[in-house]
Image (cartoon, rainbow, N blue to C red; front, side, top):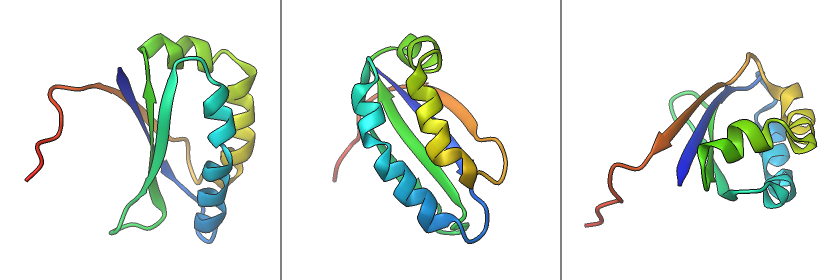
Length: 101
């Protein structure tokens, strides 16, 4: 499993509309081959910055399958109008699971 983290800066005043658009995208990710789930984190220090965190079965499920599909265009049509600048996207592989206390 890999985790995609897309850091997004949204236009001022568009924050709540962006949250609603990402929530609406659940159906898009549900239909994406290899997508295991997703979530949205909002920065406390900078409320216009968000991390869209998406879990994929394999890197290619995102970089080839999703990005090369019509689902990617649906996703960008929902969230793209809220971007203040292009998002930064990185992929991560787990080093070890969470340690709970």
